[in-house]
Image (cartoon, rainbow, N blue to C red; front, side, top):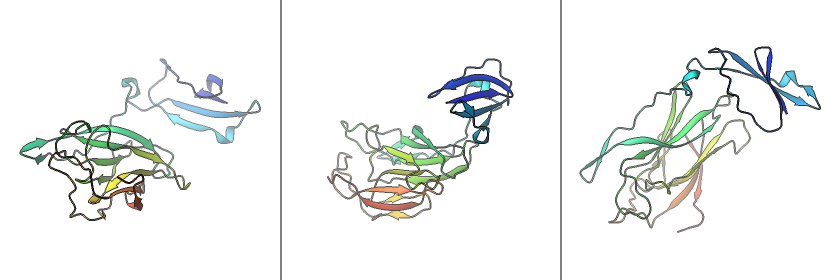
Length: 219
């Protein structure tokens, strides 16, 4: 259970799970404090403070992105846009970073044939600092049902890692190639039905590949 204070004013008391506060009277950059309650007693030494962002009345935080340059595939220009996202504290500073997938404009569902552009994963701090970019390479097809990724502190060091399927030619966040960069498993219809598949754990702070194993189940 916990109490929520705005300054010294108690605005929410003793919720067992979670609460969303729609406080229409807050001042920009006002301070909130979350105080755990154990056995009916406030644990002030465990309190956490939050400051409302300056642009909070707009309902969002604006984060500038470093765009993926357009590319040409089969005589067509391919552009990239932000797609699925997750969050995690990758550097242990107590604030979430955002990890998201760049989707090419020619991405395909697995029911549709056709070549696609590469899939990229980016990590940004909330102030817009770009921490790393992973290029999954030509042997990972782009589409809504192809690349799922997980962000979680798997090794318990208070810093989240990033996990997803990779393949020969994937380039991690520090420029290291996974597998054999010369391989191209795409068939004439743009599908990738053969060749090696891997599962890679990436360092969430640097994007460096920490460990890569064969993907299971095999093809």
